[in-house]
Length: 287
Image (cartoon, rainbow, N blue to C red; front, side, top):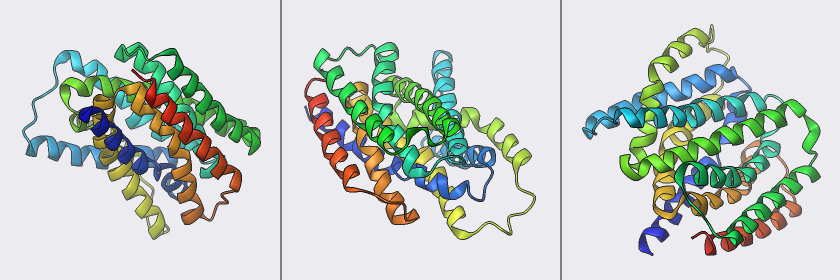
């Protein structure tokens, strides 16, 4: 029971950290090219991860772990950051954030496929209901405002769900922060090369908010958040703790309203309450 509670606490910390990712990305892509932003944040986080692995003298992953680490890298190091950065060229952060409400369902599905978890039928009822609430909210806000942006966000959710589930399964044996660190190091040579290729001709026009946003998505979204998130998934269960992601859109909306002056309505708050109830129900029937 103590391990499960610790998993939910670590998972919640991870969700709060991730909630700032889309607003920060939205600020960054206003001045940085999306491809440069994706590879630069991965390169910065990868260099830091390499230092951490060397400092703590972590054992190298086995040959069998490499395939799983490549899936993690493709899902959360490259896929999700790139697809969301491209999507945020077409939609606002407030619009994109509601898609995150579909991420728990994707994570739970991949958790069953890759992690072998089998939650009770009632869990799936609450999970689908929570996702439906968020999807319905997205529809009410003008879901088809940008078909390209929406399609990119949907692709981002699928790749991220796979990366979350694969990383959580691997973290049971390799360790939470070690998984994301090795995934970053594995992709580091390519990320450094692509950063050099896509580096802007000049940084003179880049303003302070964009630099701060780059620092946030590099350090917190790309590394620190995963330390808590993968540990939480491994301790409390992929499907169960993954439901906390239903709260991420509303943490993100609060940040979008505060930092980007994007509107947050009473309807958003009502949906938040409904989502919290779905998370509580899903947690009860997760095992």
